[in-house]
Length: 157
Image 1 (cartoon, rainbow, N blue to C red):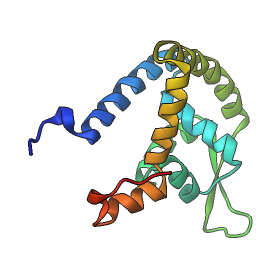
Image 2: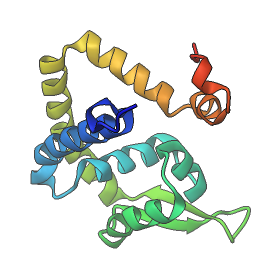
Image 3: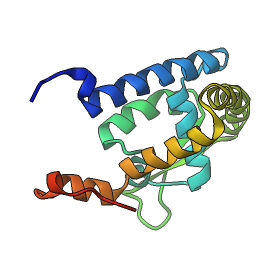
């Protein structure tokens, strides 16, 4: 068995992720936010006021990485960490009014990048790709991957 990076799923997925991230970051550059930051604002809006743990699970991030990524968004007033009304030890993340405005600005830029991606890649292929990538983030895939017998079977959905 070779150790050729071009046959490594992890290496190719990371390369693709970096390239697409660069393209979306360029598209969002006029807003001053990166695509990951836009994604976090949009996810917080969709989730309401998630806890750090809930947001980390949804975005498939570890808590320290999420905390690091949230710092500039809270510093700039787009997000706020507030105590949970039922448990003061827990912090919830809320989108501020300033964050809503910024999300409206970045959403237009993101939509342009998304439309260009689908125009070049193909809308049907993009839908299929997102479906496959969502499966890769699923607990079912993780469980099957970590199963010692996984090398002999394919997980189906």
